[in-house]
Image (cartoon, rainbow, N blue to C red; front, side, top):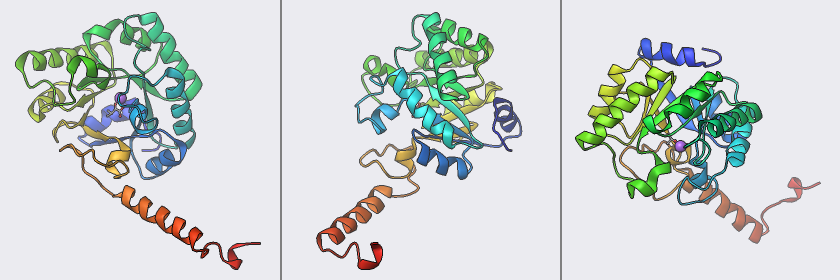
Length: 265
Ligand code: KIV
Ligand code: NA
């Protein structure tokens, strides 16, 4: 696989090759992730938390998402780049949604967009798709609705919410989404959706029986501290590695052991 396309992501599902996806918000990190072979890079609105330090994803703006996406796109040689549409840029008015999606595609060079929700935002998704912009859905725990949920706990445990999720997933496929993220829902439900749909279903906290996995890169690298949900596997402890490196630098400066004569001109 050279350049990853929506067509290839579909084909990966068909041949049961799992899809790897991680978030990326900046050039340096995106270069590493793309070089390491990640199939899909998500310029997530989790940048609001991870990069900007906000408590929720709600405050991040369209301009800020475009800035992050531009930085990521500059680094990418192979991965498919999906850009989250931020809160307020697509809900309620499909004309506004289309304008927002066009700005993302035009100004960032990203390859597709992701929106949270199902039937409620159907018109917006259809209008964006009609412009030829690939759309990824996102159901389950949708953080832009955190004040409706009131908690970041697992979603769709009750029959009614599970049924609505299944119907929304069918709808998203039917109207033409190229893929779907399922966040923090029971594994059996995610399995059922992935088996029924022909488009790739990417899980986060949705168990193993989906077509791919996504994690927030700062979480899986152990850059963030104190966020330890069950679904998060940490592949490094970069917080500790970096704290150690920086502490030694501070020490060396204070003790005058850095720089040496040889490290000067
Ligand atoms: O913004 C984000 O990081 C996401 C993933 C968790 C799916 O939407
Ligand atoms: Na997101």
